[in-house]
Length: 337
Figure 1: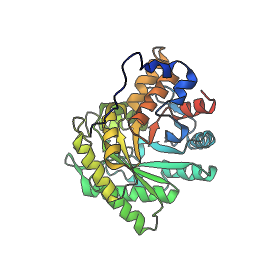
Figure 2 (figure 1 turned 120 degrees about the vertical axis):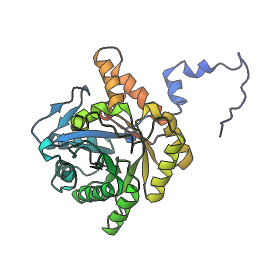
Figure 3 (figure 1 turned 180 degrees about the horizontal axis):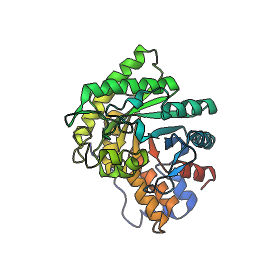
Figure 4 (figure 1 turned 90 degrees about the horizontal axis):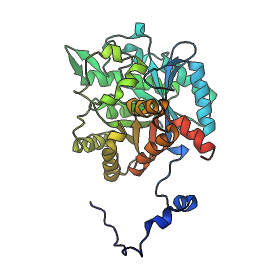
């Protein structure tokens, strides 16, 4: 439905710049605001000591478990509501069936337990997908060059359950298999884990913006020249996104996500307008790398472009954003900048 705008008197009776002349006036009439409550901070963890830089993501590192705990404690102190964990799995543990994903002592589960023991008011979100654990780099089980949907869903249910038993608060399936939200919700109810939230990667596109993330979790080498277009969405499609979101809501999703973010602001807006459910976007690794890389070279002001890009998500109707800038923004807000 097209919005209608009330007619305005012509110049000079209307002078819109009156409301822009001073800082206090601009703040007074701001339509959208970015706050710390809008942030989810994605963190990469690895099973080793110290931190490992990610060259394609300036300023982002893979953290050891103890350093991930320290980061989580800082996030809690800054007021960030939740962090999201993604593993860089030891290549020796990767297999065709990704069985390490449902090992209750994998790096994600041990990190979740450590973080929950060290914090009291911080949500932990866990990704559910097999790509960090498979030797072929796909999000699902592969046979004769084809992704097996239903068999993958069974594996994802096992993965979700071990993460929840470790203490995960929000399960976020990112695999884009058909029916996985309903299967995970059913399993959680069966196990008397009905308090666990489901944030569905409901409209996840087969995007070229994921490259640095695949470097970070170590799946780029495994995937090679392969692609995920048989399960992730066609970037040309918008109506299909609404159908995907509707299915995930019907299957039990509490919240939905659009991924990537800035190239898909139209989808964020359409999803929020259509469903009025908590709606999130993931400002993905490629989006971060463009801004952070340009800032590193002095071409952009890092703080200003980070804030402006995240404000765009709020304007597009998002209730929150998964962003690698989360800590930077939270620190800025704490300093009153």
